[in-house]
Amino acid sequence: ARIKDLEDALEDALARHAPEALTAQVLALETEKAMEAVRFQEAENETATLQALLIEAENETATLQALLIEERARYQEERAREEDAARGVEQTVRDALARDAETVARLEASGEAALRSAEEKFTLAVREAEAGFAVA
Image 1 (spheres, rainbow, N blue to C red):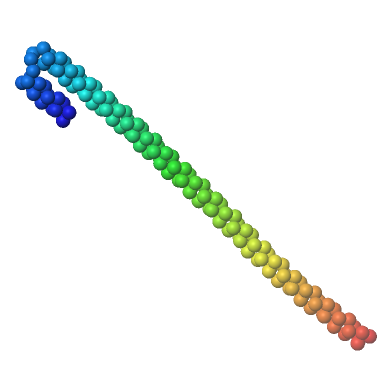
Image 2: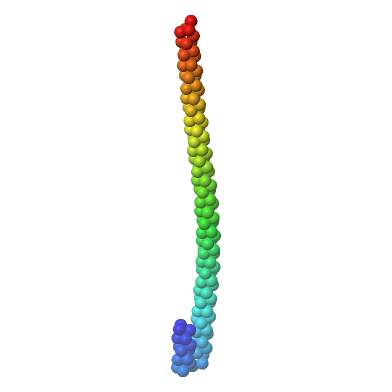
C-alpha cells in the first residue's frame, strides 16, 4: 500500500511540476521505494529466522517428550521387576513357613506317638512286674 501511495504521488508530481523538479522527486520516490523493499526483505528474513527458531524449539520439545516417555517406561519396568521380586520373596517365605508348620506337625505327631508307645511299654512293664510279684 505504501509503494502504491508513492507511485500515485509520483504521477501527481509529474503532472504539476517541471522536469527538473520531477527528476529529484522521482529519485526521492525511487529511493523511498528501495528502502521499503529493504525493510520488507529484512522483515521476511526475521520471519524466517523466527520460524527456524520455532522449528528448533518444537524439535527440542519432541526430543524431551520422547526422553520423558522412555524414562517413564524404564521406571515402570523397574518398579514391576521390584514388585515381582517382592512377591517372589513373600511366596518363598510363605512356602518356608508352610514347610516349617508341616515339619512341626510331623514332629509333634511322631513325638506324641513315641510318648504313647513309651507309655504303653511302661504300662506293660509295670503289669508284667506286678504279675511277677503276684506269682512270687
